[in-house]
Structures are given as C-alpha cells and as structure tokens.
Image (cartoon, rainbow, N blue to C red; front, side, top):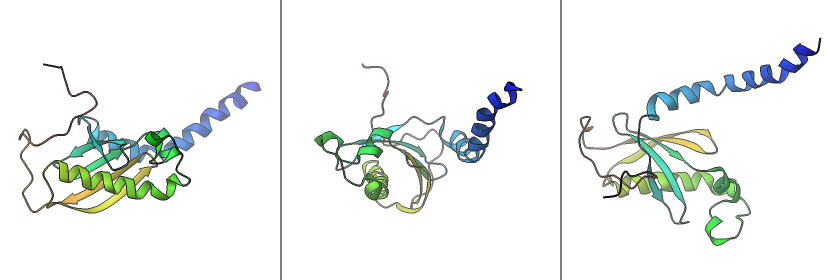
Length: 148
C-alpha cells in the first residue's frame, strides 16, 4: 500500500510538466540548433540570444540569479523590485541585439514570455530574409570557437 503514495509526487510532477511541454517543444524545435550570441545592456549583464533569422524571431535567455537580484548584480546591491524591471530589460536586450547585428531598421512586432528566464520576440525588417548559410554579423557567444 505504500507504493502508490510513493508514486504520487511523480504523478504531480508529470501533471505540472504537461503544461510546460508546449513551450519546451516549441523552443527545442526552433532554437536548439542555434548558437547563442551574447548581448549586454546598460546594467552590464549579458543575455543569451538565439536568433532564428528564417522565422524572424529571437529567444532572449537570462539567468536565475540576475532575475532574482535584478539589474544591479554587478554593483553589489539588490534591486528592490527586479520583477518590475524584467520586461524592460528583456526588451532592451532584444533592441540592442538587433542594433548590434546591423538591423537598426527592424522593429519588434510581438513577444511571448515562456517563463521569467525566457522571452521570445518576433521582429520584422524591410529587407528580405537571408538564404540559409548567408554570412551575417554575429556577436560573441559563450563558446565562440577555438582560439586562433
């Protein structure tokens, strides 16, 4: 009789994850093969950007410590309301990324918040979508490759 009670936490965890699978499968399908690039905004904190140029969408990813403490982590003080600045910081990172990859004419047309650490931004540009394999401006990533 103890066995079903032991399985209850697993069942609850599975139910909790069921709601996340749509976001997880979407992110996996559209971003998992992309190399992250890193953009830094005014608070000197890096955000990883996964840019799917064919779909004209980018996924901005933060980290849990920054989202808990807010933007002032590098200044050794705690932001009293990091949730209040989260949306602005993610939008700033998305705009900075487009500007730094020479797409100042592009505009952000929508956003989807997957969780407090991941937000997707849709964008539109006047220029046509590049063909796959086209060399485009890139920012440094976490693992830019072998040092030469």
